[in-house]
Picture 1 (cartoon, rainbow, N blue to C red):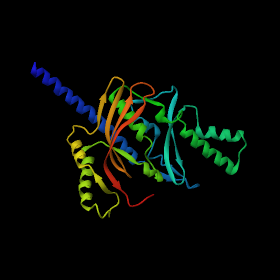
Picture 2 (cartoon, helix red, strand yellow; picture 1 turned 180 degrees about the vertical axis):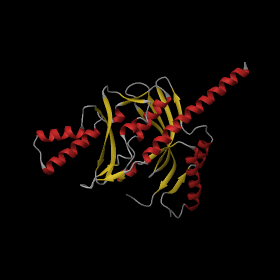
Picture 3 (cartoon, helix red, strand yellow; picture 1 turned 135 degrees about the vertical axis):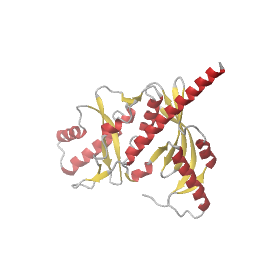
Picture 4 (spheres, rainbow, N blue to C red; picture 1 turned 45 degrees about the vertical axis):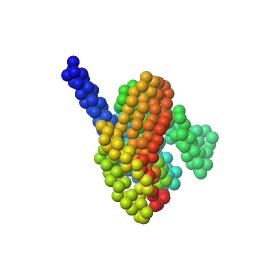
Length: 278
């Protein structure tokens, strides 16, 4: 009986490790893809655009196989909104027959706008379209009721549009720390920087570090944890923000529509000090 019990415990642990590795692989793959996305500038305008040789919206969204659009007949699309001082992509959902720029230009034609007035109208119309919760992709998807579904849903909601950031938009830059190797590198930087805490000589100096917490995470089987409950799922992971440092964040995701996400706990483990601004 004991042998059988130990066998099932070992099998369960092996399955749990394999599942956690799937989550790590997902995050590594998608973050590597995002890092490789480049911007290009139009020859006619100063506005930046995403280099389409480095990004394809269909290929990108296929990296989230466990989330779905909640509207039948809709597809994913994106628009890179360059506001001169900043720029970032906005992912939205649309009917397959809908074309954003054609739609807005037709509205401009109806009210007979020309010149700067027309350009201003188009720009403002695009802005408000992208901000509308009825079209924003992260408000119009739902997860499969499995571990990968909720992890991908949370990642897309919090990080899905954080790539190809321009200028001031880089203040939003952050990523999930998914491997112990990444965490070890942060811990080593902590130990090195804290020896020179008074000088603040290097860009990105660390002014505070909870080394005990980092070491605790290194002892875990996985630094990403998930807990399923009847009505909700709890996800705990580490997020590194370029301008603030490392955070341990815990989210609660409801398992029924509208699949609400709530940040329920946050601990600032490593504080970063930058000696420049955008």
